[in-house]
Image (cartoon, rainbow, N blue to C red):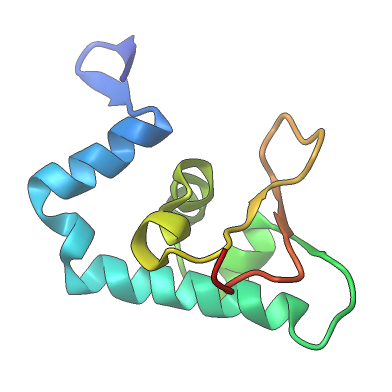
Amino acid sequence: MKDLNFNHYRFMPEGWIEALKVTGLFTGQDLQEKAGKLSAALKKRVKGRLEDGLVSRAELANETGLPESFIYNAIDSHLLLQLFGHIDAHWATGDQMKNYIEIPIDFGHEP
């Protein structure tokens, strides 16, 4: 957890997952639905393709109706891997601003 200023903190990826678990939200229906919606949108991007896909957080937010902050946290913490145990998406190589998500061609498959 990073101290940003008075009473404001930002969780690191592992801390975000732990906070979800401690609060019981990790197994909650809301998180499952959001994660499922994100997973389906990512899977749709590579379905029928022969190469990895690439999408921006903003595009995914517009497409799914999910907040960009949720998408950011989900990708950064590998939430989909944690919840579903399948091959996960990740930040695009060299994208230090973490705006673009690389989707492996085998996204959603068993590792």
